[in-house]
Image 1: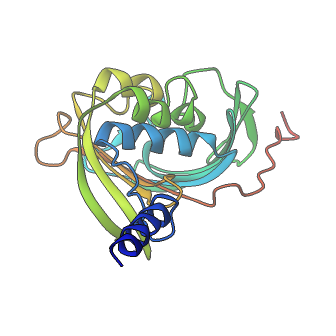
Image 2: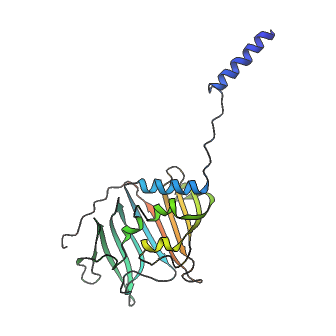
Image 3: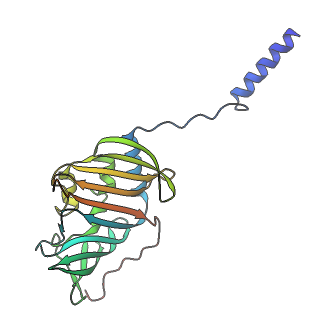
Length: 237
């Protein structure tokens, strides 16, 4: 009887060792920095994405001539650097809608009055494509320029479990991708990403040094990952 008990114990041990009754091994826990890096990579790996950007707080001027104030923009990105977007701007009390196309390093934009297309000189107007530049854009900065990172927790965002991470990005790293519109000083960052895909869902950038009472705030919402995007140069240009 004693020997039979020993045999049973050994068999049970073998079954557990082989996975018959073993508990699942918990997934390794990522540090906030590792999580941010993976979110940046997963977002950057998507070949296309829809973005909607809302600006609030201190007015943001959208052109080198400092005529138009940018209030929002919405469009589609096709990797690596093609964008179709609509910019909503205001000037002298009026509101206008400007369409823009970025393709093969060139930017095209509509005249807010005549609505005819024209080709812009680099740096003369805000180009949304540069925000997602693979070597310096927001996804790159989540991997290489995100500081003081902490995991706020898991939250529900638009009905999906999401990670919420916060931290800062140096203003000097954001100025080149925002035509100097963002990054007066250190910029506070809140990032949400889908817990399953680790793709970014929402990114809030607060330029804390721009105005203590009403800092410039950019809210970027990502959606439509992998959608078909057809970017072409305007026929008039």
